[in-house]
Length: 163
Image (cartoon, rainbow, N blue to C red; front, side, top):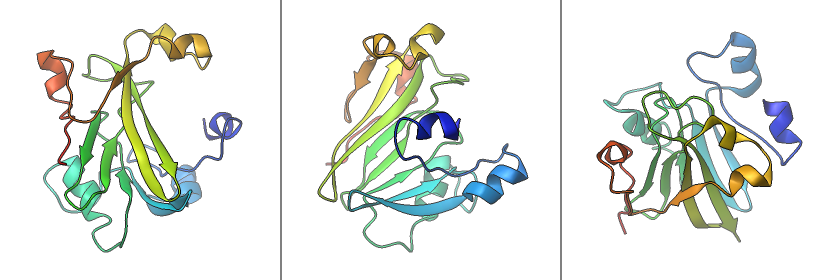
């Protein structure tokens, strides 16, 4: 998967709790990357203290200054929060394994001059819409921070804006 994504753009990530030791050795379990001047914390979200995955993800970078965003996974439950100090907390969900979620999902963060100027989670329904072609992208439904779809099932995604 990393090779495929790297054909599109520079790609980095972290290994998760179900990944083989070779992938853990290659990627690690937690890292800070700088993209476009913005510092992003990457973690799977399953390690460390905290009752919930978002709590564990935030705590993994509590000692890091000036984080523009903390990006995590583990639960596959999409989440997009604006944090009180201005950063973002994002779980993009999963474009391949929606588990108990109604939709497949993926996240997009846009960085301009060291600042995240847009963050969104994109939801889609059918496995056929996961195609990497632009045709599949036409079917993506965008969920902005602070909005919900109105469906009770999507409420568990806890998409909100703390601004």
